[in-house]
Every structure is written in C-alpha cells, then in structure tokens.
Length: 98
Image (cartoon, rainbow, N blue to C red; front, side):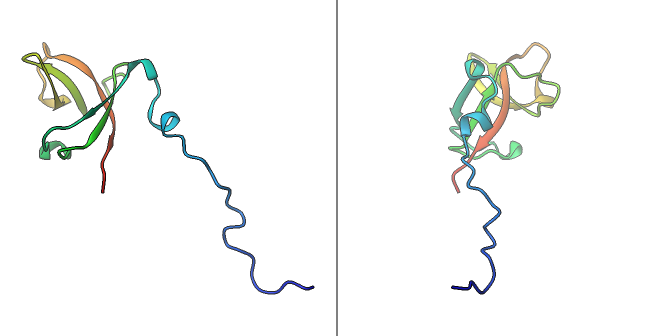
C-alpha cells in the first residue's frame, strides 16, 4: 500500500507535560499562595486572583509585594511603600480564572 497526502503537521511536536510546581515554584519552603479578597485595579489584580509569593526572592526586580501593614497582609507596589514597611515577600505569579 502506498501512502498519499501530507504528513500530520503535529508529527514533529512531542507531548510535553507541564509541571506547575516546577514552573511556578523556585523555593518550595519560602513560597506561599494567597487569594485576593478585593480588586487592586491600580495593580492589575482582581478579587479572587491567586497570587504566588516567594519570600526568598530579591526585591530589586519586583514591582508587586505583599507587605505587613497594621498587622495585616496587603499588596503594594514597591514604589508605594515606606522604608520602615515590613515586607513579607515578592509576588512572582498571578493565577486568574478566565
């Protein structure tokens, strides 16, 4: 039997497993997951977003941080915090249901 037609365009693509733990977590012992309880429109976050926070990351490349204010954790832009503000960690990823 002789084959005719074109080969499958997917022939050269392998099925790759996606491991979200490997993709999203660099330091398991210092990584925390939180769900936002309100919109942070100025920061691009919505109520119910899941944020991944890594306490071991350097802050110089960060924009969004989780900080401790008045005994509560909240989200702030690095430009909006005072030097004495206690930083909990750097937001590394945001997960949002579409």
